[in-house]
Amino acid sequence: MSWLEIPLSSDAPYFSQENQLFGYSYNFEFEWIERENFWAWHIYDAREQPLALGIKLIAEWPLFVHRAGDQVLAFYLRPKVPNAQLELTSLQSDFNLVVHAAI
Image (tube, rainbow, N blue to C red; front, side, top):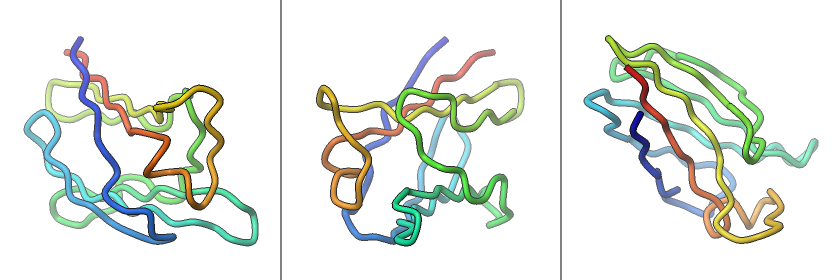
C-alpha cells in the first residue's frame, strides 16, 4: 500500500484544484457551508463527471473510496497540527488530504 499527501491549494471558502493521483486525474472542489459550519468536498473525474458530491469533511475518517483501474484509492483528511478543528480558516493551514492506494 502506498499513500500521497495532497496539499490544499487555497484558504478561500470555495475553491477547486486538479490532482494527478496514481495515474488518474481528479478535480476536487471544496465548499464552506456557512449555514451549517462545515466543509463539503465534491470529486470529479478527468471528464468532469461527478464521482461524489457533498462529502462532509471529517478529520481522520474514511471520506471516499474509489476503484481506479486495478487500484482502490481511499481518501482521508489528516490534521497537520494536534487538536486541529475544521473551520473556515483552518482547512488549508491545518489539514492535508491523504490518499492511500491498494492493489
